[in-house]
Length: 235
Figure 1 (spheres, rainbow, N blue to C red):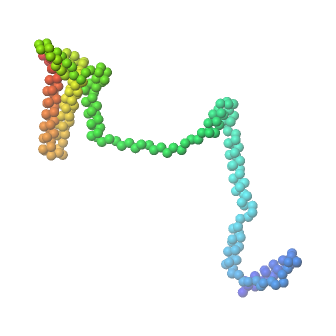
Figure 2: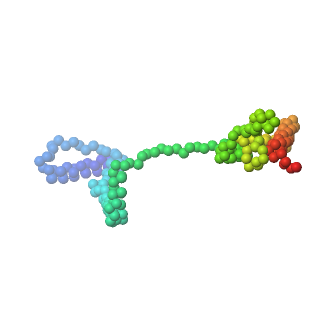
Figure 3: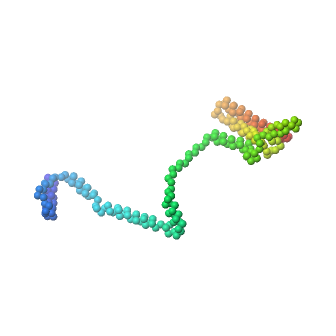
């Protein structure tokens, strides 16, 4: 009740003020004031208090304009612009007027490490080529096999080993010697595998037998090759 009386009093004051300020636009049919809820009026006043003033939007604009002005001043007057060299200014402006850096999407290749057996095979192949005299064959270019004439019959027979020359060889001679060296190395590896305790006994016996046989064959054939090449070797 008190709230309704107070609202009627305020509306009467407002009507008198409006009649005083605008006597021509006075309306005869004034609607009676409607009662309003205090909570609704409180929310309306709270909304009005939060509404920004007309001067507030200009403040951030002024604040933003100051750093932009400073940045523009700094960019228009760099330290490099004081250079007197015309080539510097030419190289600074001319290439970038028509050239554009490309946008590349390069991916680094992913490299995977080879397996241990692959590395072992490559090392063994390299060893075979080196001990076979591949460097000598490329530089000197000897024939695959030689030939000699029999003094009694006069027939020409092929010769695999170049006799009397330790620093010379035919291609087949070098490959044969290199194969025997590799065979001896593989025999030593097989004997080492035969000592593994985690393997079956039959597998270990097979490895040991193959390793010993390989080493013996490589040694006997190497000694035979060297005696054919140098007949008086170790005598």
